[in-house]
Amino acid sequence: DKVATIRFDNYTKRNALSKDLIGEVLSALNAFSTQDVRALVIRTDEKNKVWSSGHDITELPESCRDPLPADDAIEVLLAAIQSFRAPIIAMVDGEAWGAACDLVMCCDIVYGDESCSFAITPAKLGLPYTASGISHFLSRMPVNFVNEMFCSALPIGAERAGRIGLINELVPAKHLESKVY
Image 1 (cartoon, rainbow, N blue to C red):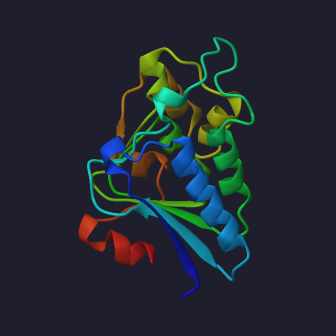
Image 2: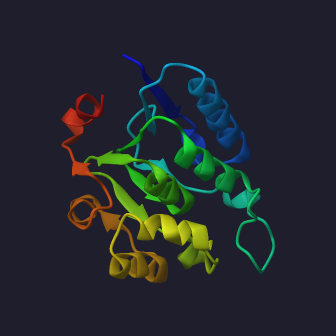
């Protein structure tokens, strides 16, 4: 039905956004851009506690200045998601941390089940966050909740995420896939 799907399936690494995984996603986005795709769903291959643990921290740059250079794989991925020609739907059924949370913010539509939660974990690690990343959150949520996420690193659970506009709709797990597709 002209709906493309990208499935994260590296559960041993909690679907960390490594350079390899990002390369695969970018390759898929590239391939889908030449097809008659009307929507793209980003999801996990199977239900787990963690949807994605965010940036693979073993690949973080060691600079004490700008957190991520513009050519970092995560930044390239987020730009590709934002510029994709069809709507991108995040189907979140688990926890999204750090850069994975940022990825969700860049999607056009976000559906989550009762297990979804979102946290900006770089704050826990004492890492700065990019200005462009913060703007992704500000475009989707009220500033007071963005401040809370970036300053506290505490997760925002499913029900609250729905109330504050982080997700478009909270859907029971048994109906999530059918709702998205």
